[in-house]
Amino acid sequence: MSPFSVVFCGTSAFALPCLEALSGDGRFRVTAVITQPDKPVGRKQLLTPPPVKTLAQRLGLPVFQPVKINAEWKELAGKMEKPDFLVAVSYGQILSQEILDFATKAPVNVHASLLPELRGASPIQHAVLLNHAKSGVTVQRMVKELDAGPVLGQTELPLEERETTSALHDKLAAAGAALLLSTLAKPLKEVPQDASKATFCRKLSRTDGVVDPAAMSAADIDRRVRALTPWPGVSWNDMKLLETSLIPHADAYPVPCAGSTTLYVLSLQPAGKKPMQGAAYARGLRSPSL
RNA sequence: CGCGGGGUGGAGCAGCUGGUAGCUCGCCAGGCUCAUAACCUGGAGGUCACAGGUUCGAAUCCUGUCCCCGCAA
Image 1 (spheres, rainbow, N blue to C red):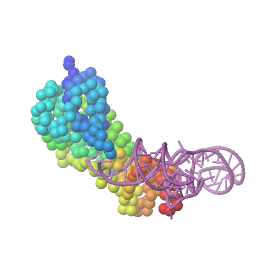
Image 2 (cartoon, chains in turn orange, brown):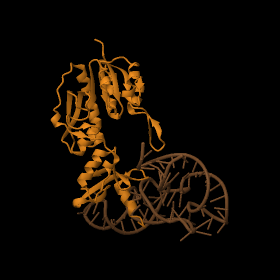
Image 3 (tube, rainbow, N blue to C red):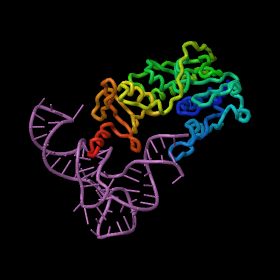
Image 4 (cartoon, helix red, strand yellow):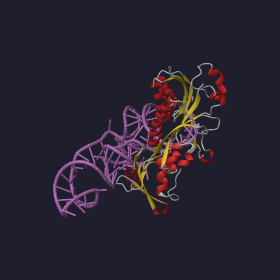
């Protein structure tokens, strides 16, 4: 039987394993990749392509970058064949019903949480931030309401003792890719979400990473560092806390926190400086005139 | 020309109202110690980003260049 055709919508690094897996599997055929437009990034405002675009080009797949996919859909749809599946992974734009209906079999989404928990934009960060015991990935059939579609497949993953967002991200991305393939390869079986158990997580902003040792306990700050690094990052005054611990360490910079707790900063980055060890920063502090 | 910080021995910093470079560490050697990330002694290691200028003399003042980074997006 001929492979399932797929139109892939994705943008960030989380989507890479899914795209790579689909493209490398004989049961599927990716006919087009839709991703966000290149965006100006950094001090130089250099136009930077999203990770998915880079991968798609390497794989030799046609790439489309609509500014507003819903508005440009009519034109866009004419450029590609109707696929069996429309797969959306961390794409970044809400798809209209018209687009969802484009797929002949189903529009599906890979979401980095155990739906109905943590619907929304930042499920990985929130799983760490809220100190959840487990997380996972869900493949759902997309419906109009965000992340509310019936579940097609789910993989649970326990969180490590001191789980970090970046580590969890990679694990979930890999698990998501595996789950996506195994789910789509078999006849779809839908399990409705229990909407009454739904929780939500909003998009994070830089202010979520602002921290004040005078008002927060070491454990609290440590959890934020693990959850919000590398994005949006945790900042204290003019420096970013990159890596922290609750256990004393020779290379750490001890910071007294609320409730007589101590946070051991293993590495940090003052404004205008490169990342450095906590102990190195502390040495600089002892210099005369300070 | 979006705003701003910075480039000084391996690391983090000071010195910058001009006069042959210093601190906290690290490293090497020796000593003390049951022992140590502790302590003591000694030592190696620096074209002070680069180029030009001012000066008797510049890390330090002036000009230009390169590089790194924070914010904003």
